[in-house]
Image (cartoon, rainbow, N blue to C red; front, top):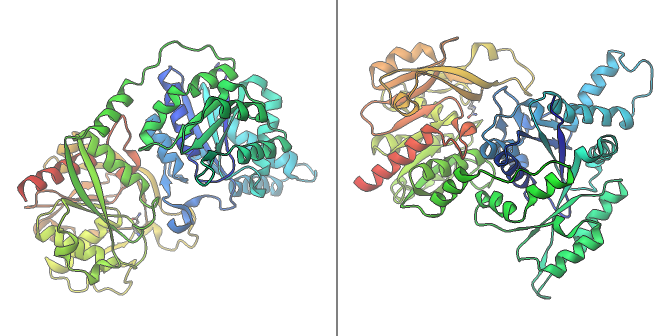
Length: 537
Ligand code: GLN
């Protein structure tokens, strides 16, 4: 049986320091040294999962194979480690309380008073150790959302304290903190780091390793100061300087020996060799592109950096596969209506229409697709993007006036996209969509098949509405082909246009499965099509 080691990653001073990227980078390095690793995120908010949070609050909602709606950091974990995560990899305070309260209702606490310590902290520890008990992992890396000192994160830090006490050297704590640069003084300041470590100490946790986010290199005396004030070894003060891409971070952490420090702190024998050649190759191609394309991404959340995180990263992966730099032109679907399409799309090589919910900006999406169809510009529609392509084709090619998705217009005469039958009557919004991985059979005569190179594929979903099979024949006979079908319940998963260089709509979310090691074939194909379009236009 494996003896799993538990690594915790906490954050200090400020949020958004990149705990997810540091965790994923550490996982990559440990994998490179031959260890099996999984990463978990514990989120201190009360929502049971982020599925009902809007992108203004929370950025993208990432979906796992088993249909969990999770934090977007899990996307980084999968993209870096190329290993699928699951519901067990993202746990919120809401989920912890939900299960404790359910146990209490079942009478499992035998009449005792249910308290934060030990009952909530026991449940937190159970959710962490459940991953270790699968016997699959040498390391479980657990990232704690938020910043130490937040009221919400107290029980999580207390659970770390207990685990450290119970498991000793099988636990290590990494504290990621900010070392701000004061331009007026021309100096980096360590005081906020000292204070955040003090906050951790007040809760009984001494970090083993301190990773310092900084805009400028830390000199030796600064490192020594942090080591001394925070009771860590000098070699355990790790610099994480701003990088030009998140994909540089594993190599930065390798240079700083973060992996070695973790192995040392957990009394693990240090394998001499590390194999991260594939990662270096990826980075090399990313940094030395031979070509360049500009992709228009049309959506209603384009102003938010994290709303389409996985799509943005998948485009980068697809670009690297084609040795191509991908520039994004973000086009707001609500504002495009007032602009001339010729002008908005004058400098782009392909159009991607993003997923989404609700009617805001919908006509902008539909008209952008009309433009791509008529002008033979490569088009990629994802989830709502695919549904809009079906609506556009219905209205403008099949002559179904006012055709729509019944999500946007419940009274449309032509509901070419309609609520799935098993969604009817559902009242609760949380966790009730069609979620997670489903099979899809591809038509041998399709671009999708050409790209995937296999007939049976599996992709992840997150939706309630679907292509209305009543119209399937009419679409197929008139040039919009339904080329990917779910074999179990006959749902349309992929559509393509005949007589168009590259026009693919998918009901699923391919962006959740693209990784550095395995760029997704649809994104690779899309960028290749954009390149071709650029050369002939
Ligand atoms: N709103 C659409 C549906 O529920 C599309 C969802 C999505 O784009 N993820 O079917």
